[in-house]
Amino acid sequence: MKTIVLDTNFLIYCAKYKIDFFSEIDRLCFFPYKLAVVDETITELEKVKPKELNLIKKFIEKIQVIKSNENYVDKELISLSKKGFIIATQDLELKKKLECPVIVIRQKKYLELRNKA
Image 1 (cartoon, rainbow, N blue to C red):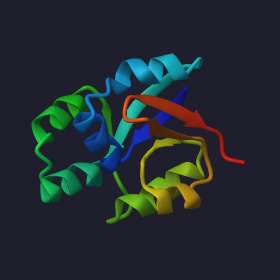
Image 2: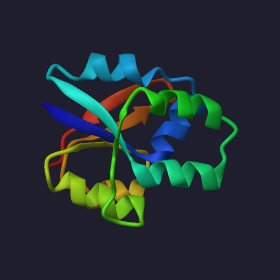
Image 3: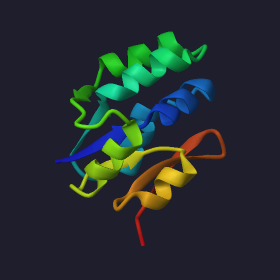
Image 4: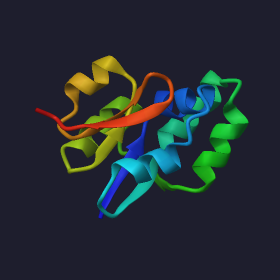
């Protein structure tokens, strides 16, 4: 079973553009998976306080929270990418550093799974 870890900005964009990432990820993934966030993502959301925060919290209630070994979410995501996790993010700089498949938002309405070259 693969674990798909959702980055902070991915959650914010999904809420902002009203993307049902649960059904979109089901559409993309023809393999068993579970969704997760890093605990520091929750901390980042509290600091940023996007207007969609309540909706995002409802998303997070339904998924696993991974205890972070890092104080910085991006470092933790890079570490997880080396262990075979799939990362969902919109962060351009982070995507360049990841060593795994990445899920991104396309045209503000659907998701795309990109394999790392």
